[in-house]
Image (tube, rainbow, N blue to C red; front, side, top):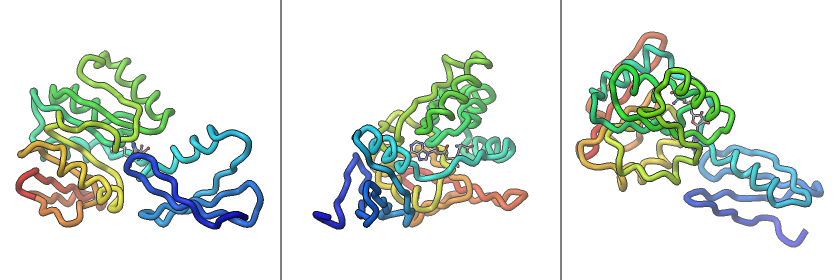
Length: 208
Ligand SMILES: C[S@@+](CC[C@H](N)C(=O)[O-])C[C@H]1O[C@@H](n2cnc3c(N)ncnc32)[C@H](O)[C@@H]1O
C-alpha cells in the first residue's frame, strides 16, 4: 500500500480515509462523529462520491412528534412574514405545519433523496407549493441569511458543526429552535420539557 491515510475534503466536511489491508476497501472515519462507514471502491469515482454523500449526514432520520413540532413553532412565535428553514427536514412535517398553520414561508433542506420525494409529495398533496419548498442539498451548503427562524432536530455534534454557520449567516433576533439537542456554548432563552422525555431549546441570535 502506498499510504495508510489520506484526507478527503468537501465543503465544510473533512473525513479521514484509512486504507485497510483488504483490497478495494476503504474505511472512512468521520473526525467529528467517530463513525466508521465502509465504502467499496471499484472502477468509478462516482461510486465513492455516493458513499461520501451519505457520510455528509449528521443525523439519522427520526421524526419529531406532531405535538413537539407545534410546541417548537409556538416557542419561536412563528407568524406570517417569517421565513423558516428546517435543516434536515425529513418527511417535511415542520415545513408543512409552518406553512399551513402559521402562514410562514417555509423551506426544508434534506440530503436524502427518498425523504425529499416524500416531503415534496406531501407538500403537493396539500397544495402548499407556494408557501413550502423542499430543497435537496447538504444544509452546510445553503445560504441561511433569509431565515428568521431555523428549526433543528439533529445531534449535539451536528449542532456543534452548524454553530459557526448559524452565527455567521443569521441576522440578529432570528430564532433557532432545537429539538432534544442543545447548542453547546449558547444560552437558551427558553427550555421546555415536554411529555415523553422531549426537550425543546429556544435561542435568539444576539442574546445567545
Ligand atoms: C432527526 S431527522 C429530523 C427530521 C425533521 N426535521 C423532524 O424534526 O421531524 C434529521 C434529518 O436530517 C437529515 N440530514 C442530516 N444531515 C444532513 C445534511 N448535512 N444536510 C441535509 N439534511 C441532513 C437526515 O437525513 C434526517 O432526515
